[in-house]
Image: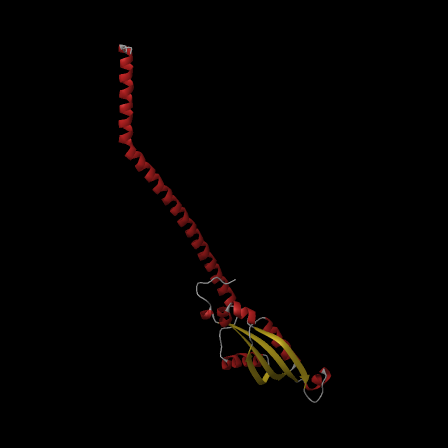
Length: 207
């Protein structure tokens, strides 16, 4: 076997030394590399969690905005309904409207109108908040009195005339007979809408 020259020995020494140095460096920095990888993984998880939280906060803000808009609509619509009244109070309310226009209420009956069954099944809580009453009134007065009554009711929220029948007094059945006596018997049907905001579901979105 040929002997190695001095130059070859030096090269081999340098290579062995370099291998030892590289191995020692790798052993020294390996824990640091592992720590960096672990830190990157934690940072990635935190970024994902932060993105999910930001998305959740966006959804919450959207829901809050929707709730605020719904509450504003409810406050706006509340003015278009009457406040809840008992039958006695409703009797007094309508009698006051009639007498205010010169009519005399002779008979008044009140019955509750059932809301649409499908609507009740879909939203029972809202149905409880909204009460509909049908009121049948027999009154006497002149045609002018009735016209003034119709004009007033047209400008009221929560009250509408749904039907009416006018019969002249004095034995006739024509408007000509009414012109002779000036008086008519009026059978008027009212529909009353009342909203109890306290029964609306708190914190829910109202379409």
